[in-house]
Length: 232
Image 1 (cartoon, helix red, strand yellow):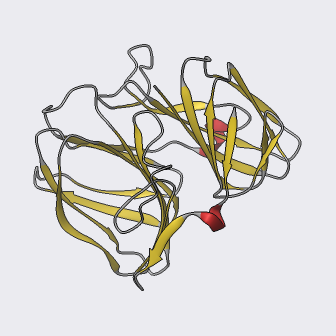
Image 2 (image 1 turned 45 degrees about the vertical axis):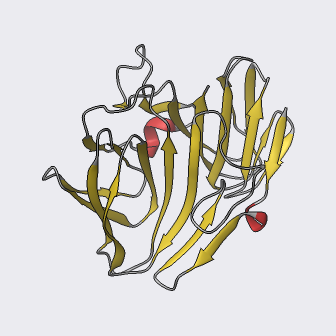
């Protein structure tokens, strides 16, 4: 089963410096039908104005993944971590027992990100942060694991959750398969382009909530950049 969630029907708000859309209930947007998808609790589509961002604020007991679609995000936190993550790359913060962080767009142009929150296996872990590049050329025509809490996924940013985040870039007409397993769930969003997922058309920034599908066959209708969360 695949449920299409069109971008223009998502909740959200425009705060001037931040134009945000929420795939799940978040902040002032509440929809009892869209509280989470398995352990995936947040997927926000954020556009952050130049020279602005999120001032220091706390988190706990959440795995927070930021996928940069355009521009760059600059991170700093109460553990002393600092870093800049550019378009196509990923940062992960395990909030654990508690951490304060700030995320700024220090660039001259708009930064666009997906921010994804996944519930950890256990509460109270040790907070941590990390970032790394994931060249789009390495994802050409196939899915690459970017973030994972599954033991067999060695070459990925680690999280403390039974979930993985994968990405792919496809040229028009190209097809990639992802073996999900009928007992698991997935949430797929094209960062750019239009795809068909097991015959369901999904446009850029639409969401596709997937369950009871053993294999996902994704075909690009036009050149596309895809992000998918595989969870329980």
